[in-house]
Length: 124
Image (tube, rainbow, N blue to C red; front, side, top):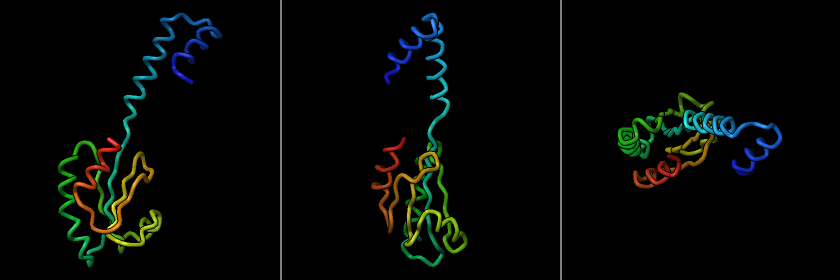
């Protein structure tokens, strides 16, 4: 239901003044702005993995580039097997992108900075 239809129906059924409706709308919009979406990039890796070592500087560059917008984490699958199972990690490196804690995208294998940038920008 469109916001204007919702407020028109609310106005008719609740007999609210237009100023009250606008105040409610303002509060809803303000709350939406406060609840910003959180974006997280998780690098699933292992110390013995060659491609993972090649992925590391790419992730570090992205972390610097998006330091105030995106949370970056590195997970060693040997030390955190349960977390790797939770995200169904079967090969490394795997880069998982989470939006508000939900997996929205993942990349298996060495992934370019450009490809990751495009994916990150989709959710910012």
